[in-house]
Length: 92
Image (spheres, rainbow, N blue to C red):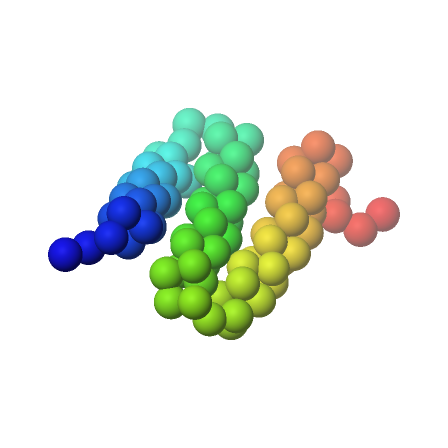
């Protein structure tokens, strides 16, 4: 019989994966570029959360390190895309 923690982790993972599906739909069918950037930003956040939930589930440190890398790369890419949409160039 599954413990309460295992059920909660499974539920959290399903919710995060469902959010990733909705973000992917918005990313592909977004009406404007700003909507697509926001969907991509939310998608990498959901990926980071999925890595954290898997790290809790399996009790290993590697998933937390992956989550930190996803957060760093996602933050920098979001800033670059926002700057590109505002000014039309990334590097001044």
